[in-house]
Image 1 (cartoon, rainbow, N blue to C red):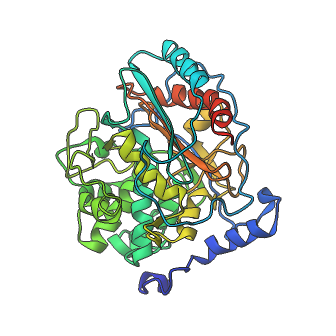
Image 2 (cartoon, rainbow, N blue to C red):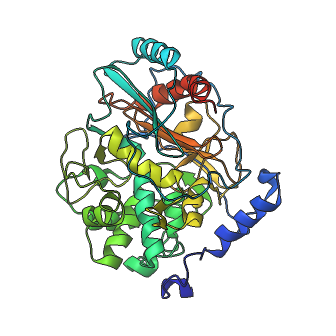
Length: 426
């Protein structure tokens, strides 16, 4: 048995050997793709095909497939913004130079006119390294304080919960369902890291994640019987099963339900105390608390989500201290499974050659080992991203009310980014 299953993390700077070797490799070489991940294991990004309860996995065949590849993102070349004391929550009142937004307003208005059915409005928020709200634009029926289901943007938030539990020593990145849940069979050795990289070997979707009248633990337990796609660490399949199992491990280890874990580890420390900020089973209906959809069930306002995103941008720093160690947050921008076979990937279906980190897409073309732009688009159109290289983070928020919003939102974000960068001088 790996000793990390028994030991608490000995120091704030502790990292799994495989994570550390990858980061050292990145620091030593500009040719990031050539870096050996030290584990001989692959990873990729994918999307689950077929009917799925994951609020972000089904592509919309009616939308165009000619999404432009992004040229903004580059592999991580430095450590990004300095880790200064974390300021107050993102606030429009923060001191910032005026930003000219006429071109962005025009582009947003034009995008809304071309939006798929169901998109009634959009909100664009952009923050700098001081958390100053540089851009706050809305068109149509939308606003920064409008509560909405964020669908697969939940994956990034759930990943933060797991990273905080690693920080606390409650879980380790090498913990497995076999060790924590008593599983046997093909998925017993899938690590917490693999589960959040969607390379556990299990299919990305299971119908039980949409069932209100069950529990998270019962739903996760049933996933032992899914047909494996491959050995853990060798196949990437986008979907909701992986983080559901990880959450069951977290509940089993801590004795706390997911809602308590989310509030204790992330929401409350960030000053987000509204009970309406929550995970549910069916986010469009606001139903189900016993079996929350970990990978797609969060309901939040853009302002609340921005506060959470600031924790990622600042590499885990909160009120001058590391709420989550910087090295753990940086795992979100690493691909430790570059050779994994891609089973299904919505990004690639939409025309983007993106791969996956830890609950996040890496917005660099190809199977790079690391990337300084990460994102987590949701099926209804809610798309957050962090650009460590340019020193800002943003959200394009919308709620289509049905699947198919992610493609449109991703295309819109890539159209807006050059205008954003010009407006904020990045």
